[in-house]
Amino acid sequence: MPIRLFDTLSREIRPLQPADGQTLGFYCCGPTVYGPAHIGNFRTFLLQDVLRRTLEADGMAVNHVRNITDVDDKTIRQSQAEGMSLLAFTEKWTEKFHADCGRLNLLTPSEEPRATGHIPEQVAMIEKLVAGGHAYVAADGSVYFKVTSCEHYGELARLDREALRTQSTNSAGESNDADEYDRESVSDFALWKARKPEDGDNFWPSPWGEGRPGWHIECSAMSTRYLGESFDLHGGGVDLCFPHHENEIAQSECASGVRPFARHWFHSAHLMVEGAKMSKSLGNLYTLDDLVEKGHSPMAIRWALIAGHYRQQLNFTMNGLQAAASALAKLEKTLAPLLERLGVSRDEFRGWIAPNSLLTTGVFAPAWEALCEDLNVPAALGALFSALKDLDDPDFDKLALAGQLQGLGGLLYALGLDLFAVEESPAASAPEAVVALAQQRWEAKKNKDFASADALRAEIQAAGWQVLDRKDGFDLEKV
Ligand code: AMP
Ligand code: ZN
Image (cartoon, rainbow, N blue to C red; front, side):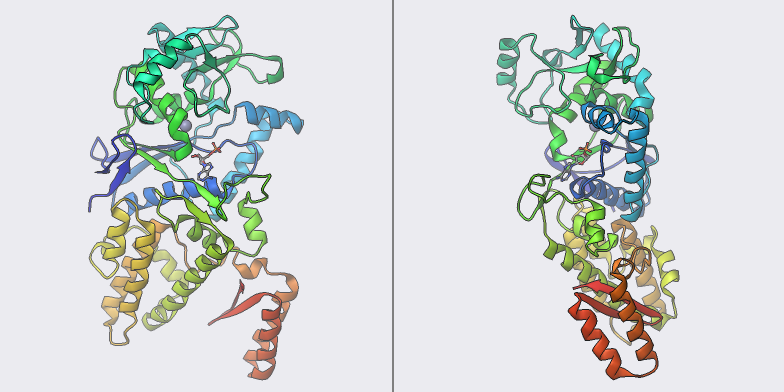
């Protein structure tokens, strides 16, 4: 079934297909590694992961490239503040990012290039731009991209081209070298930043003198290196649309002479927290650790972050996270007796969570179709629960049931929902005292001392936790 997706450049929902008919090249702007990623970053990475998984569940090969931004104003400033070399500092935060990705069940990209590992490619691209008259060298040895030299500059962000021409003429020669840019102004931007004393040891040689690359050029150079001058799909959060992606297009197309740089653009809307923009000063900036420390499981967090449509802002709330945890628990609870009927263990079922073609025909087909039509995760989750209701029939033929549940495995693969995962279950993060009570209750229940078991359940509940019985043990869920 063709997978269709909204394309920011054409403003249309279009089929997503690899140009070579085989492997879809997918570039994603990755994290800037100067601290732990927040849940907004993860919403974007998770939606890219769901898209990749959906393509794979459909039988498509995906060459997924996601970079690591390990040199910019923020990484340099922060590494100096902590008295670490840029390399050691960014390595530390890259490792943390990988660990968080693992807990959230994100697939590892096919390639994960680092900006500092691709300086020669960036320098070579800048040389081409200078030679082609698209870039100029300033007096201090910095190199700037000349926005007016690119005829189609502004197409992605739909900038007013007339205003742009006037503005560029009025502000001729005005340039901008900040990595933390002003979104409202259009100006020539830095491709190469001449060495400044505050950069410390962080500089590289170039034909224009020592310095470091600007932020935008790294993605152009690395996507070209790994996916070619024109590739299938490019993704990022909506904030990157302008100027970052606009600049990527301009640099890449002016350097290579090949259009389009990316054939399809995938932007995900931002995550808000309790109705407000996330910020440290409001105290609403959450990392994965913050939420796990509050007793939430990474899988419930994954569910909460992908559950809204990618083109709509997601308002993340603690109630929403509770609802996600309940939905996940309900899914597992509904599934458990069906697996028992088939004599399939939870571990065996986890092995079914893989791409498979059974998904497209059975009761889960409507959920699958929702994913295929502009990655409608909320509709897919809704359809998944209605399909499960259809299966909850003791007369359902066992063989047919097995086939349907394998189809469900394909859907869960696409959503990246690793059901019955024991790793970091809420039980693991419940306070020791609560776990001890739950163990006492489990013993009491085994000894058929139901009065004590009930009393202990009440005590656990009063401490803010709920015990969920399993065949071979228990789970603890935060109330
Ligand atoms: P950064 O580490 O700042 O380069 O961002 C990594 C990714 O997270 C980019 O694709 C951003 O667009 C995305 N991003 C940043 N903030 C949010 C947010 N609040 N909601 C969703 N995505 C975000
Ligand atoms: Zn980028």
